[in-house]
Image 1 (tube, helix red, strand yellow):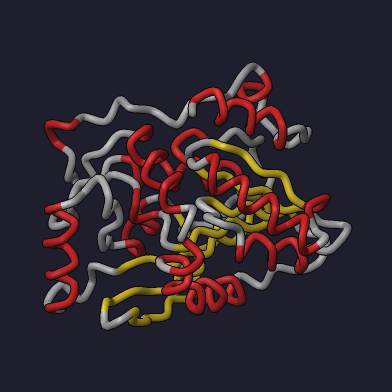
Image 2 (cartoon, helix red, strand yellow):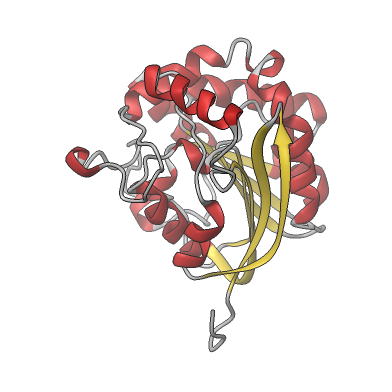
Length: 268
C-alpha cells in the first residue's frame, strides 16, 4: 500500500503550488514522533493511540462502504459548513480529509474554471473513489489530489483562500492538533478562512457523548475520532473566530466553526 500511496502522489500532485519539500519526494504520512507517554495534553480530551499506517488501513477498508455509512451521516452538516466559508469563483481552496469527495466535488464547481481545489487524504482508496467522482462530474481538471497527512502539508506558504475540514480535526491525536492548525495557518493567505465541522467536547455532560467516548476508548484504532474543544484550539493557534454554530448529529454535540487567519498587523 505504501507504493500505491507514492504512486498517487506522483499521479495527482503536479502543480507549482507544491512546496520544494514535496517536489523532493513527499511520500510519508506525517510524523510519528508524538510522545505517547503524555498523549492527552488537553484536559479531558481522549488520545488517539494509533499510527498513521493503521489509520490509512482503516480508511482504505472504510472506502468500500463509506458513502452509505459515516459519509452519509455527516453529509448534511458538511454541506452546511461548506456554505459558511463562502467559496467563490476563481479561489484556490484546500480540503483536508476529503473522504470519497462529496464536498470536494462541490468546491470544484464553486471555484469554477478559473479556480482550483486541492485535496489531501491519508487513504489511497479514498483518493481513487474521489478521482472517479470528479471525472463523472466533469470537474477533474479543477482538482489535484494528494495522498498524505495534514501534520506535514506539502503546499507553499499563503497558497489558499480557504481550507475546509469536515469531521477531520478530531481524528488527530491531541498533541498533533496544534501542529495541524499551525500548518494550515501557514498555507492560508492573510485573511483566509478555515471552515471546520467537528464533534464538540463542550457539552461534556451529554450521555451520548460519554457513550461515544467509551466506545472510542474500547476501539481507538477503528473509532479514531472523539470530541474536542475545537474553538479553544483555534484561538490558541492564533485564529480569529468569525462564527460558531452548535449542531447535533444523532444527539451527539457538534459544531460548525469558521475561523480567519489574521491580516498582518491585526491583533488576535
